[in-house]
Structure formats: C-alpha cells, structure tokens
Amino acid sequence: MTYRFSHRTYRLPLRTPLRTAHGPWAEREGIILRLEEEDGRVGFGEIAPIPWFGTETLAEADEVCRKFGDKVTAATLDQVPVKMGAVRFAVAAARSHPLDALGAPRVPLTALLPAGKAALAVLPAQLESGWLSFKWK
Image 1 (spheres, rainbow, N blue to C red):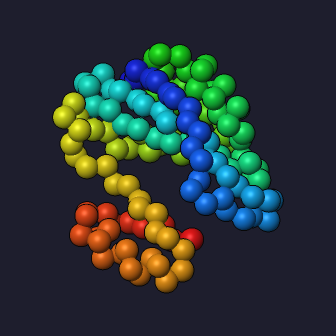
Image 2: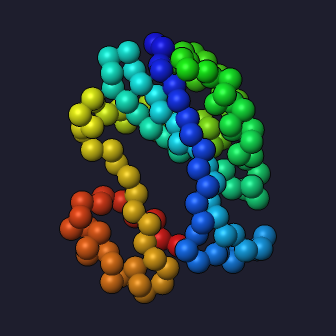
C-alpha cells in the first residue's frame, strides 16, 4: 500500500514550565504526521520525543519524515529503525486509526488531567465530554 504523507512541526509554550531533573521545561516541540490511504481514509500521529529519554531527537525525526517525501509505502514505514521509537509510535498511530473523508469514526485520544487533587474536580466534566482515557501526572 502507498500512502500520501505530510508532516508539520510545532512548538508550543507550556502555560507553566515544568520542573524536571534536567531543569525547567518551558515548551513542547513535536511533529504531527498525516497518512492518507489510497481509498481516502486519513490517520494522524504525533512525534514528540523527550530529549532526556534517550530516543531520537526532533531533528532526527524530522529528517526521517523529509526522506519519506509526499508518498510512502507501507514497506518503507515498516523499516523505520527501532531506535526511532517516537517516529515508529506516530506511524503506528496514524495507520491504526484512519478517519474517513468526513472525519468518522472518532479517534481515541487521551485527555491530560491536572496534577494532584485538581484532577478529581475536572474528571467528571471530561467524562461527560466523551473522553475515554486520561493521563495524570
């Protein structure tokens, strides 16, 4: 199978910088990739490596995406090296949750809850809004 491929980088400031063992973390960078199947179904994935986790850098991930070009085969996607874990994860996400031309079915996403007891206050509204999975730090 051959996919139409595109990707875009992003850089977003965090509302409140996180304090980590590696120092303050003030912005999040990543790449959103889009795969379109031959029948028009579309899937998305996010490449968001964290430098101190030891996976690929954002620059390395961007280089892989540029090498894919506008069209990429399933075989090429399958050959992304294991050391490129964030790229492999994003490709798998894009391939496993395709949307039709109207945007259905709903893509399973995860809502980020605030830290501590504040999560309990927002959880009911998130459930009511349709979120099915949550990340709590």
